[in-house]
Length: 228
Image (cartoon, rainbow, N blue to C red; front, side, top):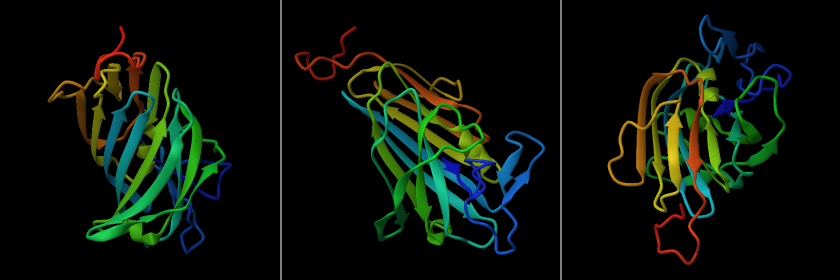
């Protein structure tokens, strides 16, 4: 997840809303990633990728934390490549015991800072309520990959401080996954066949989630069987 700003010449990944003082929220830090949003932390992310026969469904849930006045803003979400274009891209504000609220989304122009392997980007209009405790941003889309698919993680480093918790799950009910890594790390656990799990704490991401896939099973093969 990345942050966009009116300073498109500077960064795809910075906060979009200017502070009331007129100063931008970006500030330097003497470590990776060397620039961060001062006003918002990405506290938690739950990421689930479900590998279907003809597509991979990406479902990401983000919890933010305000370190300043809670302001409406635009965030820019990079869709990884390799992997086909995003289909059915959508975002919602989720609140405890309340219906989810669809949020405006639109295809975006790329910025200047590197985001990793991104084939396209989407702007999402966030209300200030996304920063309220207990509220979440959910993003979901589908990609039709070939032999490989990537999900961009490194943009998460540009929020204030590290991501306190990142949980990643890959569900592979059809047996298409040959290998999967997050931040170049193999899965921590596979509680059942076709399920891969990772957990990170206090992470400043530098890389991506990468999945290598075999060809989908032919319709004439039994359910769950994959052609070698």
